[in-house]
Image (cartoon, rainbow, N blue to C red; front, side, top):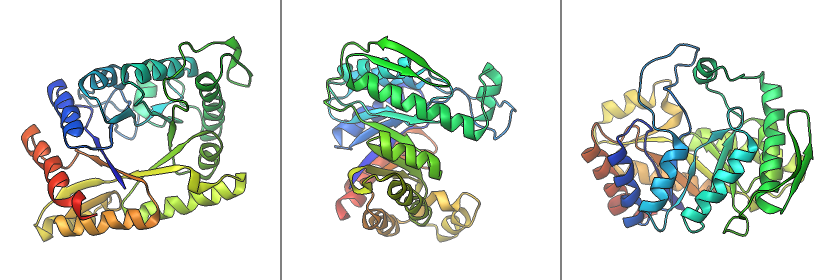
Length: 302
């Protein structure tokens, strides 16, 4: 099983790039960055917070690394036009010498859509837009020209030059809904979900059933999951977090507990676990030490 690193978008540029170099140095598999413009509030309300823009950060990461895969986790098709997504992905594939993964989602964050006047369509229409977008992006990446006539997009003999360096630049989709999972199974090469092993197992069952429904081979699609990790020997602190509303998305405890939980992902058939730095420490030094501890004490046990 592979392990990837994911810094929070409000980290300083120095830390973002230092962690990218650390991921390369420690032979981590991938480096992901969220594609959002403001902190999420769950509503139209805005709260201040500095968030660096993913498509500007990723080229810098590409130039500071030589081994890790990299990509947005994930770019919303409600915000980005498919032509931009495809052309950006190809350029990053060239900048990174073939290490790009294009992470896509349908879009969900209410306040950023509201603030910028971007229509956050009802779920059904949003998924329909996504379905058209992923087909167009896949075609632009794979073919010399793309023609597409749909409800949301119309392309006429459209190019995407140059071609990617990779024979099949992978598209990853972050989702857990049955319809989105079915679209992913038909058009993407990777599927991603949130959650500790119990929640990830539930979402994996949804994905596998969606694959069966559309006649896709689930085993042929790469699977990744992320949870919020905290390494601690404080049992009371761990229990408090795991018993909270966020508990199903967290893995909190000492090294041996984290190793056990990571092993459960492997048993479920996940190919990659993504480790965000959201709960790994209060400052850059603590977060770096946590990633180093993963590499030295946790990952080797799997």
